[in-house]
Length: 67
Image (cartoon, rainbow, N blue to C red; front, top):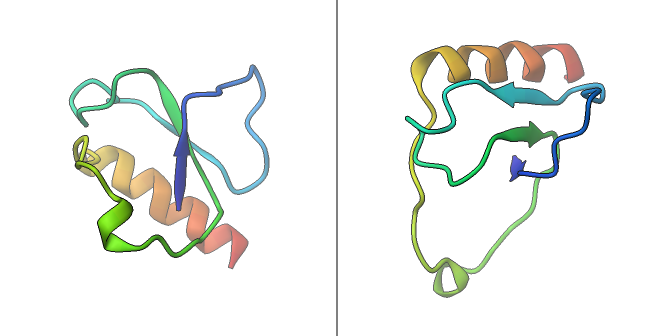
């Protein structure tokens, strides 16, 4: 799943807003987009944080809707 800080007023189908973005270690409010990709490990510079349990639950619910 991809996380973006490009948050509009409407959330698209399958997206989930990250409520506790500060606690998750993100720099800005964000949403999770239903996009999967593969990234080479050497291209990952650092881990910003981890989703809080409530946000993980919302993400799982969004995943179950799309598929």
